[in-house]
Amino acid sequence: MSVGWGWYFLSYSLGMQDTIPFQFHIQVYHEDDGSLYAEVLELPGCFTAGDTIDEIRENMQDAIECHLSGLTEMMAER
Image (cartoon, rainbow, N blue to C red; front, side):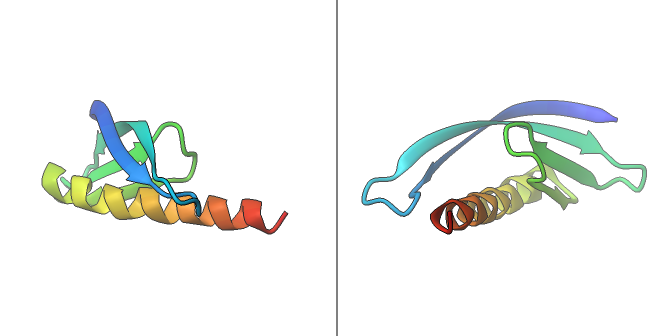
């Protein structure tokens, strides 16, 4: 069950000197066991989980950075 969505703002360096500001839509779901699950709508496969919204916010930072880092590395290999 979806419990809401919101914006997530992040500045990230794609291997360049300057950082690039990004804005993402985050969809949060309430799991049957009471935990929360969140996904980034613009980054398929980028998700996190937690027990509270604050934990989701903290975990989402790492999830987005990890996802973007992987995409950056993949593009550099081409």
